[in-house]
Image (cartoon, rainbow, N blue to C red):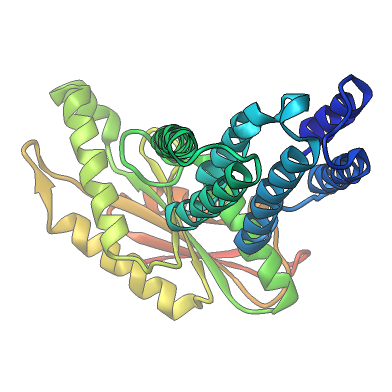
Length: 330
């Protein structure tokens, strides 16, 4: 819009004079500049309908400005400006919507060719070549856009998830936990965190090698994912350290989840044999709590389970900010 409006001004300033109306060309240029400035200043991406309206308006401005300028000013070659509309539509709009915009361009260009007085044979040839070029350019943009979105999606996946297990990584877990804690402050309720750690993981790596350790980590990750809800956040935050955040989950419900995870680990195994885990549960009541405090309480419970021999669950109750936390080992 901005560049088109600028070109309209340049075409009026330079000879020869417009065939029909230089005033119309200037007005259309001003409209394009104002709309372009508005779109740039818009903080949020407009809805699909508004983007489509902008594309259709661009087609209209190009067509009317080309007619107002007339062939004597060189606007007979202005069909190249339709490429801008085409690239814009096929990149920002759905394919169906973009094809509709292309059809509108075809109608507008046919009208322009008719007004320019070209013979039917010449006009038809120009129209077919131009529309085929616009269609191919648009489809190439669709293909490139799909490839770009695929790359962005893959990068986003890698940035948010642990590369070995596919679970959330620490950064994404902290973001999810921040949202849940903010929700808890607005709507007080229970929130729980389970810290999970493999027992004797270093000895496993030393005996069977790191590939074997990776297989155990992947197996445990599948257990954690299968035994939790979709709303729960499951993350790998260290070598063999995992966290499970359970929104709207009280002590008994979280205890049941932890016991289920413990039993699933006990009853499963890999080619290297069975393995066990220790779990530390931190249960926050309705009072506001920070992730740091909740995590520290879960770690304290986890260490209590380790000190008791591992392969068990320990629970810490996170009370009011100034109250002492208590740990129960099961």
